Every structure is written in C-alpha cells, then in structure tokens.
Image (tube, rainbow, N blue to C red):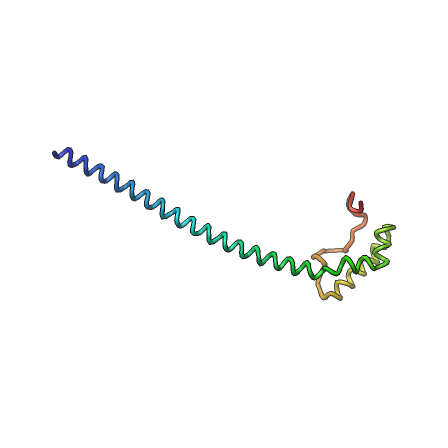
Length: 121
C-alpha cells in the first residue's frame, strides 16, 4: 500500500509539473501574441503617417516638371546637352522661390554632366 501511495504521489507530482509547464507556455504565448498585435498596430499607424508626410513633400514639387519644361535653358540642355551651369542657377533660383532648402536634398550641383550611361535615353 505504501508503494502504491508513493506511486500516486509521484504521478500527481508529474501531472502538476506538466500542467505548470503548459500554463507557463500558454501565458508566454498569450503575452507574445498580444505584443505582436500591438507592434503590428503601431507599425501600421506609423506607416500611414510616413505615407502622408512623403505625399506632402512630393506634392510641394508637383509644379516642377511643368515649370522646367517651359524654360528654354532646360530645353537646350535636354536637346543639345549644353548649359548645365545655367540650369543649375535656374534650379537654385526656383528652390529659393519655393522657400525650400534643397530640391530633394542634394549636395553640390543639381545636375551632374555627363549623366550616367543610359540616363538620357
């Protein structure tokens, strides 16, 4: 009887340990899923904010293709590949008029000539 009693206690202890491990595993899984859901929500909200910021920044320069297409110096540059310095000064003037520090944050001249291979094709 003593052996059976000891065997029951051992099995009861093993069952309690198994239940404890399952409980800890489930609690960890629940916490992980909650944190993952929170991060997904936060990252989605940030992405929406970044998208709006980027769209706003790009909309500031929506006028640029039209304005550049009307300038004869830009047309000369595109057609005859001359007048880089003149176009650079023109872009700097436009930039100042638009009250922006830089067009798309360049350093140095706005146009580097000659362009990379295939850039004018």
